[in-house]
Image (cartoon, rainbow, N blue to C red; front, side, top):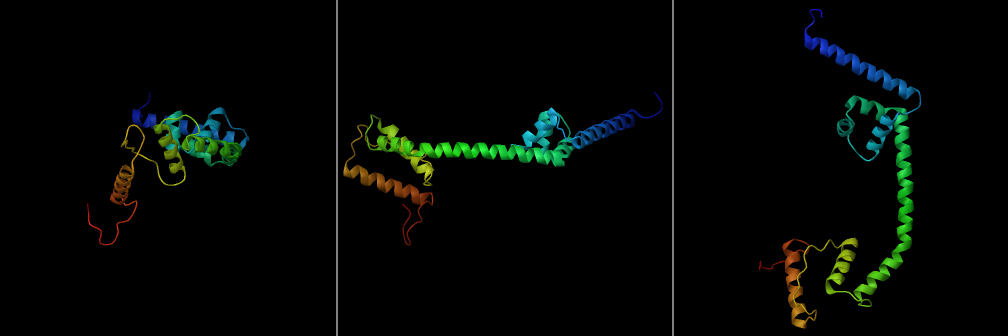
Length: 181
């Protein structure tokens, strides 16, 4: 080897390699075809991965990922993937909307005790309905009476405790002049 320091020699080789990859990528992008690796870069980009994470995942440079995803062909492929995903989402949404009446009937049957269920199953169904209608997920349930029969006093106690918890977490604002309990 000549008198070129090893670090400089490696830097030159690395630069030559990156230039070759860049030229190969440019040739591919101009040929209107994506290789398997480039399609995978675009697929990962379509699911929201960052340039850096795609590079790490596939063992390629950030520059390659940026070049492929920023190219006209890459953008076109990404638009196609997104359109296909949107169409699949809309089809699934329509199918779920068709099932909604039956699901609501099933929930209603459970809550109205038309089918054999345990109290905890009814609580779970009620919790899911509350969560999906914007009231927030139920994170804690407390059983006051194991046989499931609540007295009017039990109900009043539950209401007071729920109101106190709601006010403590600012779900319901405190009344003016209300003292801390």
